[in-house]
Image: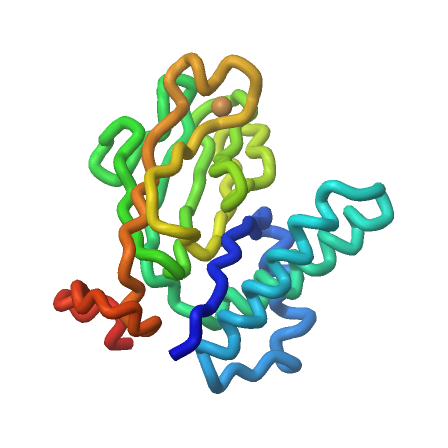
Length: 195
Ligand SMILES: [Cu+2]
Protein backbone atom coordinates (compact mmCIF):
# COMPACT_ATOMS: atom_id res chain seq x y z
CA UNK A 1 0.00 0.00 0.00
CA UNK A 2 1.36 3.34 -0.93
CA UNK A 3 0.28 6.69 0.31
CA UNK A 4 0.39 8.86 -2.69
CA UNK A 5 0.58 12.48 -1.84
CA UNK A 6 -2.36 14.35 -3.16
CA UNK A 7 -0.79 17.47 -4.39
CA UNK A 8 -3.66 19.27 -5.84
CA UNK A 9 -2.85 22.16 -7.94
CA UNK A 10 -4.15 23.90 -10.91
CA UNK A 11 -3.89 23.48 -14.55
CA UNK A 12 -5.98 25.24 -16.94
CA UNK A 13 -5.97 26.63 -20.30
CA UNK A 14 -7.82 28.54 -22.89
CA UNK A 15 -9.39 26.12 -25.25
CA UNK A 16 -7.54 27.70 -28.14
CA UNK A 17 -4.19 27.21 -26.49
CA UNK A 18 -5.18 23.72 -25.67
CA UNK A 19 -6.09 22.79 -29.21
CA UNK A 20 -2.87 24.28 -30.51
CA UNK A 21 -0.77 22.35 -28.05
CA UNK A 22 -2.65 19.20 -28.81
CA UNK A 23 -1.99 19.10 -32.52
CA UNK A 24 1.66 19.94 -31.96
CA UNK A 25 2.55 17.15 -29.57
CA UNK A 26 -0.18 14.62 -30.00
CA UNK A 27 2.00 12.05 -31.69
CA UNK A 28 4.61 12.18 -28.96
CA UNK A 29 2.22 11.33 -26.15
CA UNK A 30 1.38 7.73 -25.70
CA UNK A 31 -0.47 6.77 -22.59
CA UNK A 32 -0.68 3.21 -21.49
CA UNK A 33 -0.95 3.54 -17.75
CA UNK A 34 -3.43 5.98 -16.33
CA UNK A 35 -2.02 5.81 -12.82
CA UNK A 36 1.43 6.55 -14.12
CA UNK A 37 -0.02 9.46 -15.99
CA UNK A 38 -1.68 10.78 -12.87
CA UNK A 39 1.65 10.70 -11.07
CA UNK A 40 3.17 12.63 -13.90
CA UNK A 41 0.36 15.16 -13.73
CA UNK A 42 0.76 15.52 -9.99
CA UNK A 43 4.47 16.19 -10.31
CA UNK A 44 4.01 18.71 -13.07
CA UNK A 45 1.28 20.42 -11.12
CA UNK A 46 3.43 20.91 -8.05
CA UNK A 47 6.23 22.29 -10.17
CA UNK A 48 3.78 24.61 -11.81
CA UNK A 49 2.63 26.02 -8.52
CA UNK A 50 6.22 26.96 -7.70
CA UNK A 51 6.83 28.48 -11.10
CA UNK A 52 3.74 30.66 -10.95
CA UNK A 53 5.11 32.58 -8.04
CA UNK A 54 8.47 33.28 -9.62
CA UNK A 55 9.83 35.53 -12.32
CA UNK A 56 8.39 36.35 -15.70
CA UNK A 57 10.79 33.94 -17.36
CA UNK A 58 9.64 31.14 -15.15
CA UNK A 59 6.06 32.05 -15.88
CA UNK A 60 6.75 31.36 -19.53
CA UNK A 61 8.13 28.03 -18.54
CA UNK A 62 4.97 27.47 -16.57
CA UNK A 63 2.92 28.25 -19.63
CA UNK A 64 4.86 25.64 -21.56
CA UNK A 65 4.32 23.10 -18.82
CA UNK A 66 0.65 23.89 -18.85
CA UNK A 67 0.53 23.01 -22.52
CA UNK A 68 2.24 19.71 -21.89
CA UNK A 69 -0.08 19.01 -19.00
CA UNK A 70 -3.10 19.82 -21.07
CA UNK A 71 -2.03 17.34 -23.70
CA UNK A 72 -1.62 14.71 -21.00
CA UNK A 73 -4.95 15.53 -19.48
CA UNK A 74 -6.70 15.21 -22.81
CA UNK A 75 -5.80 11.52 -22.65
CA UNK A 76 -7.44 10.90 -19.34
CA UNK A 77 -11.15 10.86 -18.90
CA UNK A 78 -11.86 12.96 -15.81
CA UNK A 79 -13.56 11.21 -12.91
CA UNK A 80 -15.83 14.17 -12.42
CA UNK A 81 -16.83 16.71 -15.01
CA UNK A 82 -19.07 19.68 -14.52
CA UNK A 83 -20.01 22.78 -16.47
CA UNK A 84 -20.35 26.25 -15.03
CA UNK A 85 -21.30 29.53 -16.65
CA UNK A 86 -19.90 32.62 -14.97
CA UNK A 87 -22.22 35.49 -14.10
CA UNK A 88 -21.65 38.28 -11.61
CA UNK A 89 -24.55 36.95 -9.55
CA UNK A 90 -22.99 33.50 -9.35
CA UNK A 91 -21.75 30.44 -11.22
CA UNK A 92 -24.61 28.80 -13.04
CA UNK A 93 -24.63 25.00 -13.12
CA UNK A 94 -26.18 22.58 -15.57
CA UNK A 95 -29.76 22.91 -14.42
CA UNK A 96 -29.55 26.64 -13.97
CA UNK A 97 -28.59 26.09 -10.36
CA UNK A 98 -26.68 28.93 -8.77
CA UNK A 99 -23.25 28.05 -7.34
CA UNK A 100 -23.91 24.28 -7.33
CA UNK A 101 -22.22 22.16 -4.70
CA UNK A 102 -19.58 20.02 -6.42
CA UNK A 103 -18.79 16.70 -4.76
CA UNK A 104 -15.69 14.67 -5.58
CA UNK A 105 -13.36 12.17 -3.90
CA UNK A 106 -9.76 12.52 -2.82
CA UNK A 107 -7.39 12.13 -5.71
CA UNK A 108 -10.02 12.29 -8.40
CA UNK A 109 -9.32 14.11 -11.58
CA UNK A 110 -11.84 16.91 -11.82
CA UNK A 111 -12.66 18.94 -14.87
CA UNK A 112 -14.68 22.14 -14.82
CA UNK A 113 -15.79 23.45 -18.17
CA UNK A 114 -16.09 27.14 -17.58
CA UNK A 115 -17.89 29.55 -19.89
CA UNK A 116 -18.41 33.25 -19.60
CA UNK A 117 -22.05 34.25 -19.65
CA UNK A 118 -21.57 37.98 -19.98
CA UNK A 119 -19.20 40.70 -21.21
CA UNK A 120 -17.33 40.99 -17.93
CA UNK A 121 -14.10 39.40 -16.72
CA UNK A 122 -14.39 36.26 -14.59
CA UNK A 123 -12.30 33.32 -13.46
CA UNK A 124 -12.57 30.21 -11.30
CA UNK A 125 -10.34 29.69 -8.28
CA UNK A 126 -10.00 27.16 -5.47
CA UNK A 127 -7.14 28.21 -3.23
CA UNK A 128 -4.24 25.79 -3.50
CA UNK A 129 -6.05 23.56 -5.96
CA UNK A 130 -7.34 25.25 -9.09
CA UNK A 131 -6.91 28.52 -10.90
CA UNK A 132 -8.36 29.22 -14.32
CA UNK A 133 -7.22 31.78 -16.80
CA UNK A 134 -9.35 34.91 -17.07
CA UNK A 135 -12.41 34.82 -19.26
CA UNK A 136 -12.66 38.32 -20.66
CA UNK A 137 -15.56 38.33 -23.09
CA UNK A 138 -18.99 36.80 -23.29
CA UNK A 139 -18.68 33.34 -24.78
CA UNK A 140 -15.04 32.84 -23.74
CA UNK A 141 -14.46 29.35 -22.39
CA UNK A 142 -11.76 27.38 -20.67
CA UNK A 143 -11.21 24.09 -18.93
CA UNK A 144 -9.97 23.86 -15.39
CA UNK A 145 -8.48 20.45 -14.62
CA UNK A 146 -7.12 19.49 -11.22
CA UNK A 147 -6.62 16.62 -8.85
CA UNK A 148 -8.83 16.81 -5.77
CA UNK A 149 -6.83 17.32 -2.59
CA UNK A 150 -7.39 16.08 0.92
CA UNK A 151 -10.90 15.49 2.16
CA UNK A 152 -12.71 18.58 3.29
CA UNK A 153 -14.79 21.49 2.14
CA UNK A 154 -13.30 24.09 -0.13
CA UNK A 155 -14.65 27.27 -1.58
CA UNK A 156 -14.59 27.95 -5.27
CA UNK A 157 -14.94 31.56 -6.28
CA UNK A 158 -14.19 34.27 -8.81
CA UNK A 159 -11.06 36.22 -7.90
CA UNK A 160 -11.95 39.39 -9.78
CA UNK A 161 -12.24 42.05 -7.07
CA UNK A 162 -15.75 42.34 -5.70
CA UNK A 163 -17.17 39.34 -7.55
CA UNK A 164 -16.94 36.88 -4.71
CA UNK A 165 -18.81 39.32 -2.51
CA UNK A 166 -21.39 39.79 -5.27
CA UNK A 167 -22.25 36.10 -5.14
CA UNK A 168 -19.61 34.23 -7.13
CA UNK A 169 -18.74 31.53 -4.64
CA UNK A 170 -19.75 27.96 -3.98
CA UNK A 171 -18.59 24.79 -2.25
CA UNK A 172 -16.43 21.92 -3.47
CA UNK A 173 -16.71 18.90 -1.21
CA UNK A 174 -13.85 16.40 -1.29
CA UNK A 175 -14.94 13.12 0.26
CA UNK A 176 -12.42 10.71 1.77
CA UNK A 177 -11.74 7.24 0.48
CA UNK A 178 -10.23 7.15 -2.95
CA UNK A 179 -11.09 3.58 -3.88
CA UNK A 180 -7.80 2.76 -5.61
CA UNK A 181 -5.73 3.95 -2.70
CA UNK A 182 -6.92 1.16 -0.42
CA UNK A 183 -7.32 3.49 2.53
CA UNK A 184 -9.35 0.92 4.44
CA UNK A 185 -12.64 2.65 3.85
CA UNK A 186 -14.61 0.59 1.34
CA UNK A 187 -17.14 3.27 0.65
CA UNK A 188 -17.14 3.31 -3.10
CA UNK A 189 -19.83 0.84 -3.96
CA UNK A 190 -20.88 3.15 -6.74
CA UNK A 191 -17.99 1.76 -8.77
CA UNK A 192 -16.88 5.18 -9.86
CA UNK A 193 -13.42 3.86 -10.63
CA UNK A 194 -14.31 0.86 -12.66
CA UNK A 195 -13.10 2.49 -15.86
CU1 LIG B 1 -16.29 37.20 -11.70
